[in-house]
Amino acid sequence: MSNASQRVRETNQSVTSDFTLTGLFNHSGPHLALFSLVAAIFTMGLLGNAILIFLIHTDARLHTPMYFLLSQLSLLDVGFPLVTIPKMAADFLKEEGTISLGGCAAQMFFLMLIGVSEGILLSLMSYDRYIAMCHPLHYPVLMRRHVCLLWVGTSWLSGVLVASIQTSITLHFPYCASRAVDHFCELPALLKLSCADTSAYEWALSISGVLILVLPLSLIATSYSHVLGAVLHMHSAEAQHKAFTTFSLHITVVGLFYGAAVFMYMVPGTYHTPQPDNVVSLFYSLITPTLNPLIYSLRNREVQMALVRILFRTGFRSKR
Image 1 (cartoon, rainbow, N blue to C red):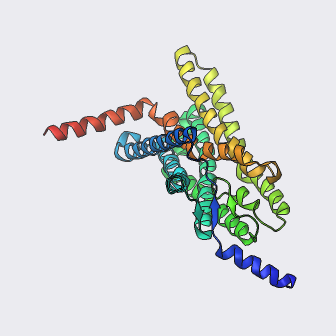
Image 2 (image 1 turned 30 degrees about the vertical axis):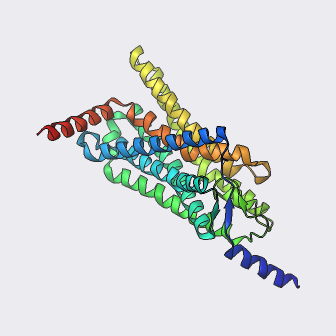
Image 3 (image 1 turned 45 degrees about the vertical axis):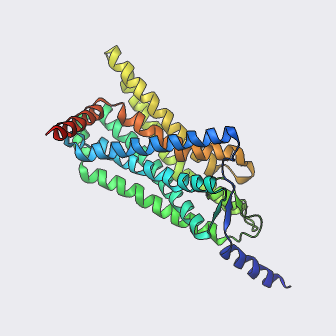
């Protein structure tokens, strides 16, 4: 058979064949317990983010730029686990793990869209806190509604653009070797299966990560360094302690999200192994979306009071 015919056969195979998701769990005792824990975290994350979106939408006191950005973060955090966890749970319960090429492409596209959008949104949220803490008199002007809408639109459009380009390039490679994908259909996992030389693209991916990941992270570091300076100059020890605690929690969540993203998309594929990749994928697709509503908002007194008002109105109407 000629080389040209061989390449055609391999390309046809890569188009028509399904992928096999190896999954994170088997049916042993410890893995059953871990699966139950993942399911519980998944449910908590969805409820927490859904409640937060509902409160911000219904309570007029939360119609501020900060809470508008938080509602967008919660919307992204609803999508993140929905892209991967239900499929993973269905495969675990059916004891099979196949996914079509189209399904794999869709999973990769939405993971990248949400990841890029959330990374940019987190940087914009840090800038919002910088303006609120360091330039409060300019806040109403700098954070006008149309500015917030422009920011959010930019984050979503950036996610769509990056996801479209990266997904189309990745699916252009032939997949003629093992079609077993570790954990989810993510770009690094698929590149490892290609029988073409992807080293140049992997290095290009690492370099593009500077623009997609490092620049927003630089904005976050700059904004929070100024916020930290403002916190340290507070005269009230109680206010300083409360602000510093919130600041530390925000930095922790940002560090978890960006640390996982940098590891997955900027570290060359030769340094990736299945087990660490599985843990990292769970962090940014499940753990961080669950922590975000708890750290950013549900601990906030304004959000707590909004929840109390909703519950009070609901209870009052039921009695009537």
